Length: 213
Image (cartoon, rainbow, N blue to C red; front, top):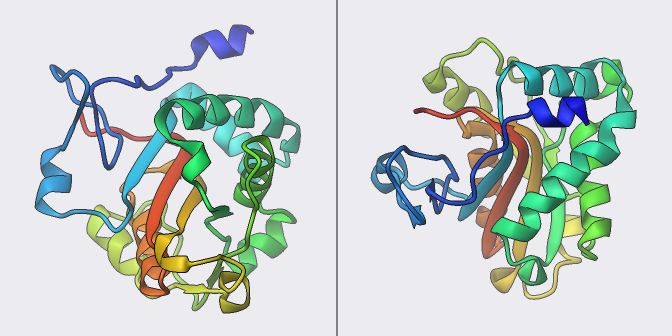
């Protein structure tokens, strides 16, 4: 409970209706300048927490220190945001941002898939492995925003055998789960890949996000 009290939860009011980032002085939902000038491929994004030092410790432990026991607490936090920010009954399927093969091998588990499977169970929707990695991109950490965008271009592909499980793809709504949204370049590329394959609407949800206040 002490740890929970230190976490900085994102507001549900005064956020961009597409990227979910907040802005001082706004009430309700609005369209931020960045999304207005360059609309993302995803239709809606939301994050539960601000990516501050306390949240960074949780994310680092969960994804790099085998602290898989945190999954329940993390999913509690994300589930609350999902039910507040999204109409979960409209979701067709839940998927996750896939790890690169080296990371999957070295880590021994896929933390985003673990989150997505549990969240799918909680909102009574199927988890479907829709995305796979291709190529060998650099790590996103340490790259500039422009470098991140270029680094992930063409690095995702759709698992078409799984895509066929979605009924009436043009009218489907897929929820993509990731741990952190920084520049949103990875989630944007995932959404673009899914839409190019015929998915109608793509929503994204993360545990945390950085903000450009």
